Image (cartoon, rainbow, N blue to C red):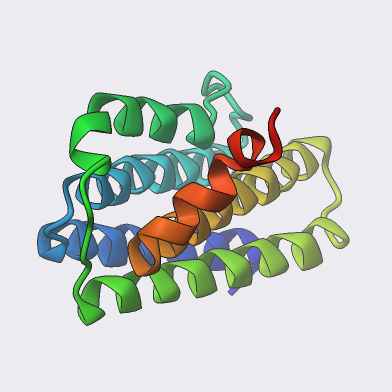
Length: 162
């Protein structure tokens, strides 16, 4: 299996995991986040497919961070309430972080071995987006596992007088 085929499999596995996690997550913003990341992973799979077919990248530049910011803005009032995630939900976020970290590492390793500019552009973009996904999941995990301190750190400018 070559790097592009393996990347397709990784993205397909991520789609399956995030789809299932969205179904099981009770926290509305977490559910929507998993759904949004699922769509990113579907887009990644399509981009990889296009490179395999030799068509190049045709998808417009999409930022996972902007998509998730939209999700959180829409659910702001619900997020301001004390959130208590189940152990299973927190575990899903831990697994998601691990998957994104491993995906990024794979894409970085693969980037060093690619031969065409299309593949290089693809893997550079996938690396950026996997890092953004990791950051999103990490931040959400911190929020769900310790909401009070999360607000303290995220709003540190208020505490610092800024």
